[in-house]
Length: 447
Image (cartoon, rainbow, N blue to C red; front, side, top):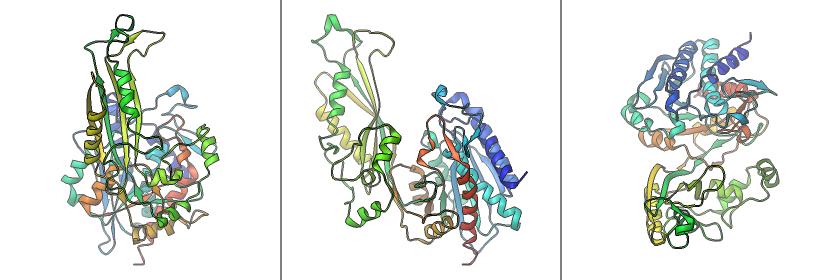
C-alpha cells in the first residue's frame, strides 16, 4: 500500500468516530476522537503528545522543537464535528466514510478532520523522508470548536508559555475553487444572542381572547422587522460605529476574487440575491457587517391546527462584525433599540451567547507570502488573499494572547457541504494539501 493510500485510510478511520461535541450523548466518542488523534501524532513522530483536560472536551497537544534558529509554528484545528441531522438526507451513512468520484463523504471530512490530518500527515511524511522537521511545530487541536470553543480561551491564557509561537497555522477556511488557493486575510467578528418576547401567563384560546390581548409572535415579528430598513441596512442606532469605509482599493481587491452571480444563484436554488444596497455580493460578505435571524419559534408547531395566541416567542439572532466594531457595544445598542421598539404588553429579554472581534491580517507579511508561494507549486492558479465572511473567534485570542501572526491556509471548498448532509472533501486537495504544507515548512530552511 502506498503512503497516500495509508494516509487516506487513516482519514477514513478518523472520520468514522462520531465526535459530536454539541450532544452530551457523544461525550465518549469525542474523547475517542482525541485519543485517536494523539495516537496518530505519536506515530507521525511528534513528541510530548498530551490529551489535556479542560472544563469541557480535551485539547490534544504535541510538539517537535529541535530547530533553535527556525520559526515556531502552532497548528490549530478541531477534531469535533457537527451533528449529522437530518440523517435521512445523506446518500451514505455520515460516520461510514465512502469515496465517490474522488471525494470522501463523511461528517467532518472538510470541517475539520480532513484539514487537520493534512498537517499531521505532512509532518509524518517529512519525518519519514528526512528524520527531522525543517521548522519547530506545536499542535493545539480542540474538541469544542463547533460549540464556540468555551474552554479554549481559558486554556490558551493558562498555557501561554506552552503555546508560544511565531505564527498560528489554521486550515479551517475555503479555497476559491479547486485550482485557486486562498489565504484569508480578514475574518468578520461575531455576536449571537437569543431574544424572548413574553406576554400572557399562558397560551390563550384565539376564539375567547383573539383581538383583545397581545400576541407574542406578532410582537416578535414587529421587533425583528424594525432591525432593517428598506435598503437592507441595519436600522439600529450606533450599529455601524467602527465599521471601516469601503475604499476604492478594497473594492479593487475584492473585484479580483472570481464571482459568478448566476452560477451562485443556480447552485443555491435562488432566483435573486439580497443584501445591503450599494455593495457587491462579495463586498457584502467580506467587508460589511450583518444582522441575521437564524431561527424563530412560537406557538403550536405540531401537525394540524391549534388556534392559540402564544404567550412566548423566541428568535435566535447573529451578527457578523467588521473593522473595530465592539461586539459588547453592538449588543448594548441592540438592547437599547429593542427597549425603544418593543410594543406595549410585551416583555423582551436578550441572552448573549457568542461574541468575537473581527480580525484583519497583513497579506504582505513573510508567513503569508511564503504560504502563497507554497500553494502555487501544486495548484494551477495564483494564490488570492480574500476577506472571509465567517468568523473564527479563537484567531483573535491567539493573536492577542500569543502575539503570533495567523496564517489561514485552507484546503476546503465552499461547495463541500460543511454542516450539511453529504459533507465531503476532495481527495485531490487532501493529497496536494500535504505537499503544500511540506513545501511551506521547507521554504524556511533557506532563511
